[in-house]
Length: 349
Image (cartoon, rainbow, N blue to C red; front, side, top):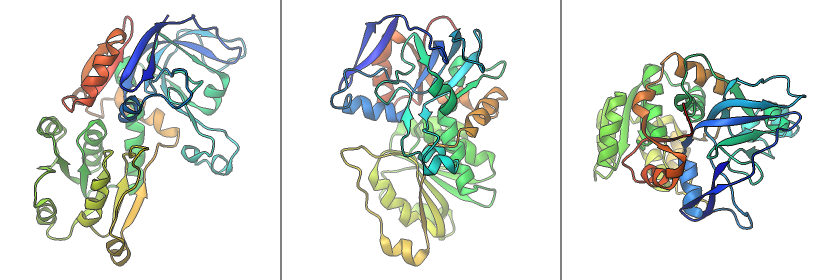
């Protein structure tokens, strides 16, 4: 079978590998679709971890179960499944409190060495993944391509539950990539007014389809003044930093109102993770600066059902699809700023 390996910085190699055996307590999935995530792009630029012989990336996958081990009770051949990456230990301080995304020993399908991901014709999901990971059967009528986007939806939905976004809120979304566009859609569905700040003209045009109330060029010299004008001089109730740019953290603290919330949704590059915040604005304004990483597993079923019920504008989000043998072109397209969500489609759909 074919699988794409992250061989070096910005280079994926398509290799022929041995057909996988099914674990006694696991399944083999014929992969049908797998999305390219912003974190995939960061790792693509960085290259594989030191000492890793090669990693098969892809952690937003969907496919069909083609083999099930004799000790696997929850899935059967023919099941259509969607897969999210998190694998918890189930035993640490955080797992015992059901804060699974903060597990001290968290591993990820398609990211952690030894857990190959979805950019391959087939995936093996062991009993560990089925028990402590996030694998769910797909609702009827949901396509594999749309199901692959459920993983990103999970994170966005969890963020808005944490902020309790509502109809009295003005929300600023910084960055109009795939996550930023979903933040707009979810915030609007909860009744909020939404301002988008985006530096790329192509993405400012694309995010307009998600019906924000205002779209502002993030390179404008009077950016903060424009935000304050839109909010009657008060500032936004919630600011979501949906990109991997530390400077947006600095701006967010200046744009949010007193007692408002700043959500750090986008991770920063490992080589440059430091950020700068005005401590006095935070202190005297009682501003909450909150990390937003991953999600509780329950959000995966919610996302799949919302997608199946067409409650999220996924048709605007997926702008490009590629076959597996075009994966390097797919990554370059996803990194170009000219696309939103890019999905690899594998085999017959």
